[in-house]
Image (tube, rainbow, N blue to C red; front, side):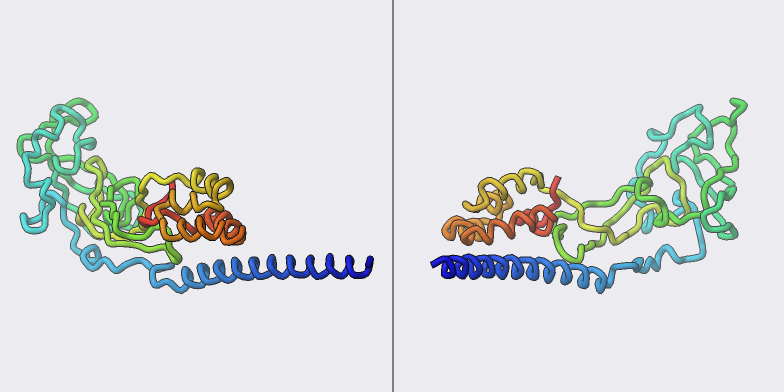
Length: 260
């Protein structure tokens, strides 16, 4: 009888170990597919071609033609230009600069600028000035740090995906930042919008009420939620898997947004 009991315990332990090994192999397979898919993505390690920005002729944004200029430039600029301030501190809409291409990338360069008609400014000695020299890094606008321009957000792309997806966004340089080339440009950026779902809430629901599908219902995945509800969390296995997948961020909101 003792031998039969030990045999039953051994068989039971082996079945449990087999189940855990299958779970580990499943998670490793999902992780490896994510890594391989991300590394093989066409966007990894590559910058999109910007044919418009590769033009060697650098002109002032204020001197663009009406067909290529930003709609903001066609408005009355004098209302946005401070009067009596330093010429070097004027926004880009208030000055016209003669940008040249004989500068070293990333290094400070001096450019000759002129305040636009109706804009009055002074130099460091508080003397009226119209022509002045402006020092700025030799960078195209699309090469600036992301904190110096604003891009439009897309709510139709999937943020929780493997590999991460990008979309074409229209970006505009902040008015107080000066740069070479066009101030409005296209750039491929990662999908990063949010629908207001909290990762901590999803994880807490998965741990406490995951067997009833509460986590999936919260994330807007009602089909999976019904499946978990009527199968009692897949007899606990589905619940355990969802805790791990939500914990690592693999499972996200159904609308494709990011957690907050």
